[in-house]
Image 1 (cartoon, rainbow, N blue to C red):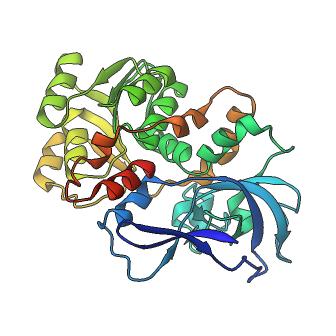
Image 2 (cartoon, rainbow, N blue to C red; image 1 turned 135 degrees about the vertical axis):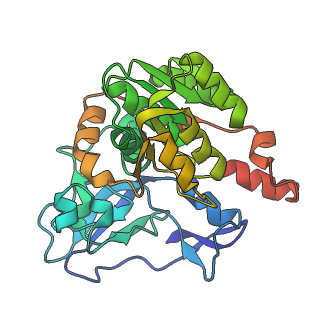
Length: 338
């Protein structure tokens, strides 16, 4: 079968790979109905993470179970399932507390950009639907595998409350899902930081009340202006850079919470600044499994439509920004993966 492999910065290949097999009694094999490229795949693609050997890509997935190991009891062949990027047994103390992304048996999904994939710890990772869903719901169920659950966790970690003022830093898939989650949790005002028209439009559709296109100190000043210099009750940090984290801290009011889910790259926090900001911070790898049943229920009832996030595109000029040393072909690859 064909699978996607990352060999190094800018070097992604579709090639023949072995079909997966049951290796442990807790495994399941699924036939992929849909998969996608995650924003976190861009870090090694752009050379910001080391790639020491070819890597099988793909950790956002949904599909049909074709085979299960002898110990698997919660799913069976023929069922449609959605799984988390973070594999867990859902029985250890951390899982029972709702943090499956810190499971004592934790593994990370890989190899899902292919026709078939092996899912370890299937009982704790996969959630089955009662019926095979219609095709138009597949993109939204795929979103539940990672970006929707991650955005939801950002809002949950930030303690979004009904009527609260929320700032979402980042307009990628996770940031947009954070906007959707904040709306579902009853936020009264949702300020989305975005510079891209198509993403701004979707943020507004998902519930944003204000759009801020400025970044850095200018973006902080605009939010301070909108909130009468008070700041936000909850901030969702969905990028993971030094600039985005600084923005999140600087727009939060004293006593607020910052939910950070952007994978950090080069982030260094000033302890003294944190001390005097009097804000709380919670985040890290999202325990998507914790939210999956609820999110899938919302999707199947058609109360939310997160699948629209996969319809977005980014202008070539923006995709290539910061990578001017790339030739045109490399820039186009970046566009396709963004």
